[in-house]
Amino acid sequence: MVNEYKRIVLLKGPECISKHNFSLFKSVLASDLSLGRDNQEKYTTAQIADIMEEKFPADAGLGKLIKFCEDLPVLKKRAEILKKERSEVIGETSLEINKQEAGPATPTSTTSHMLASERGETSTAQARTSTAKVSLWNSGGLAVQTGRGDSSSPCSGYHELTKRKGMMKEKTGVKKNKVSKEPDQPPCCEETTARCQSPIIHISSSASSTIPSAKNQKSKPQNQNIPRGAVLQSEPLTVRVLTATDPFEYGSPQHGVKNMFHATVATVSQYFHVKVFNIGLKEKFTKKNFITISNYLESKGILEISEASSVLEAAPDQMIEVPNSIIRSANVSPKICDIQKGTAGAVFYGLFMLHKKTVNQKNTIYEIKDGSGSIEVVGNGNWHNISCKEGDKLQLFCFHLKTIDKQPKLVCGEHSFIKTPRRGNAPKEPAKEEGHHQVPKQVMVLKVTEPFTYDLKEDKRMFHATVATETEFFRVKVFDTALKSKFIPRNIIAISDYFGYNGYLEIHRASCVSDVNVNQTMVVSNTLRQRANATPKISHLFSQAKGTFVNGEYLVIKKTERNKFIYYGIEDNTGKMEVVVYGRLTNVRCEPGSKLRLVCFELTSTKDGCQLRSGRHSYMQVINARR
Image (cartoon, rainbow, N blue to C red; front, side, top):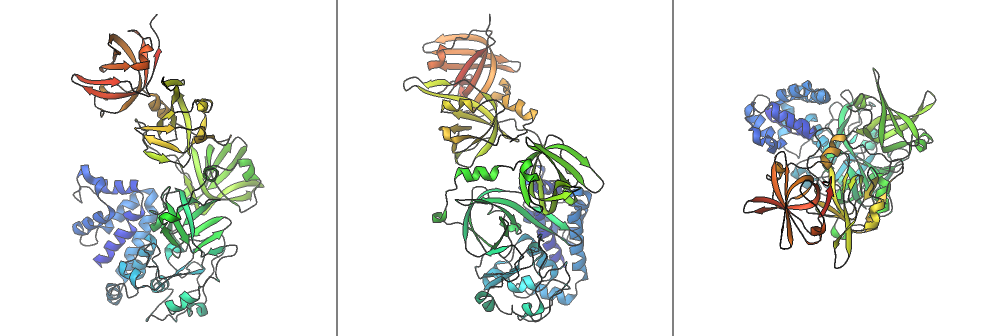
């Protein structure tokens, strides 16, 4: 029984909650689990489960986990799931327990079966012994995947269709029992029964008798129960992952809480929104990753990937080149005026600004707005009174257009998701990216220098800029001065095909920068703006690593010319430092009492301490010159 408790803790506990809540859990139980404050974050879910089993031998810490979930409003549903699983373990007979301990070759209990299906995991032995894998699509249709031995599609025919308690019973490998006909209990993995708009289609008793062996399944795929309007795509399709949300819960404790996530993928000619009902595939849906999918459903341009689908890493010779135009199209939000003209039941995705929030007893009305109009978004369930305020950006996934009170409105469905701005402190340092980046990044221009000649011999010119997303800011070197017309403060642009090097994003061609939708908006907080434009204190520079590049404005208190160099003494209220200038920048006339704006100066070490030294791409401007 303790082993069952640990399985619940491991597969239905921390593994199914967000990283933030898992960190809270470790902090709350740090004393009970003897976790050091400095290394709490290093512990994985498996390690925490092992420690809990050791510290709480009676129930492997399941009671502690339930108490923690009950205390957090966002995890109350998770607490109900854990209590339900615990009650099932307590109510099992010794015979059932013996069957569980017999190994993966025998049918598992309802508890362990549901746990494995929720995380999309089975043992290695199951993957090896299954010659054919059968699962039910989220809308009730039957799909077949022949023996790939792939842990990303883990449901075997026996374990996916047998031990759903109160629905099916099995004594041998040949299944002759009738499937329960209750509408809220389709005979398949809990994770794969995500309900769609179409009614759930059940397998009749005669259909269940057609699943006695993997051999029959392989020779005759069962695709007759695909929901209306959906098409089963069995041919492999190689795509590039553009975006993916974090996994989230949907459903209810009464009908079963499940997990899924949304993603956007693209081929060489088009992009797709994707619903992924196997969160064990989250690692494969990593931005810029290439994957090959098959045995998935396609309905109204949206792909649905369940336990029955195959998702594999693409081979090197299968890599595809997705045009930037396709990527840009995938990131563009529809205009609200176009949404209002849509047909009832149409599904929409997009990023919109929250204009007004009205909290009612049973739902919340989020009025979103762009340059073309406004529309109300009706949120209930998980999306009732979410943490957001007017002026925030809401990323909507899978919202349905409906007419309510003779007005078009976007209404959340079972698979809807809202992503809100990240909460937390704005970064103090610029974000760093390394290497070549082709995927467009939408940014707002915050600050720009004038173009200048950095190579006098070859007359090469450039300018510097500071840009930001809604959560971080970047330093940019632009080597095509024709782009100066696009780098206008507060302008929103998309940059692509750029290089990250030494803390800067480098843009070398005009084609790397494009305009975005004229109605596109971006909310960059005042705090983020201030930190992006802030001058670091001199005392702070002394603690930075050598080789760091510095931007800032400082008061000049001393000037010394020696050989081909000019040495400036600068100070602020925290200390003093030396700035060394050579080459073209020695022509800039600056005297003590003036302020110098330094851009891209490198922090170096000397015998006496530290100094800022000009380089090939440095820029210097005199401001507030002494009169």
